[in-house]
Image 1 (tube, rainbow, N blue to C red):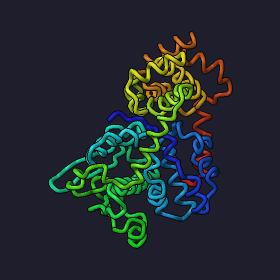
Image 2: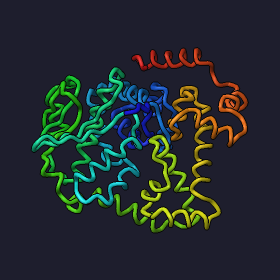
Image 3: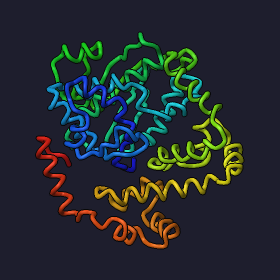
Image 4: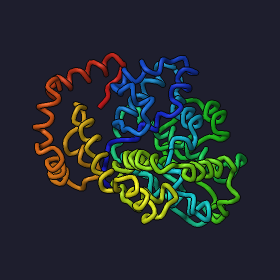
Length: 359
């Protein structure tokens, strides 16, 4: 897969409450990991995946809880997926729902991918990251497994138990801690991190799924029905901010997320004096200006986050919007932006303060 080293800030949903319960100061933890404080409030933003892993690593050391990531994932459950859950509403079976999540996971996390492999009577739902040398990655992998367990319980009911839980790394805690959190002991040093389940479960109709997941989808559908005409452009912008980093910000995808057909969405936007393309351009312009102010985002990364397949395409669009190049705009509007050497020194100082080395 192409590596996009960012994850949605939605990955921090519930973090504040959970961190406080662990005796931590959430804003201090974000500061130590060099993450913007607004990430706790603006879930439509993006954060660097390596800083996300560093945050989990710092939290587990500061709380003296080796299972911080796993327990946070179990605490968050399916809420971390946000609008991604709505893409499964037309799925007929549990297997179809997992296929939808796998196909669209990049909308939520561009640094990892979901695998879905079947071998005889066993299906494996895996979580894989290309860059394996990140401090804190074992915490992120255990968090993903915790979320996966809660997802499967939402699809198959609270009584569901995995055939096995796989973790790519050695145990971070004693056996009793894992058994208490998961109800079984994972297989450590496995070929991947993920869950195994019986293939027979994949054919179960989604209508038999736990009511919590269906309730989320029904609430979304009702929200769409109540959406007034003047609310529609702002909701489209919100969806675009979520979809752009995964390169999936098409009119068809946005309309699908709102349970509308594309033609109906376009007509309603036209009635409000705008269009999908206009909203797409405006959203990209706003995001580009925000990213240009961030000293840690390179031009190449920025292009991908805005849904462009190459840097030249982004530069042409930016020049069309502002009649200057991105670098020229940056020099005019961000005069205090630190040189790379000073930024690296600042980040290293934060890492030393956190007590670890963040890439």
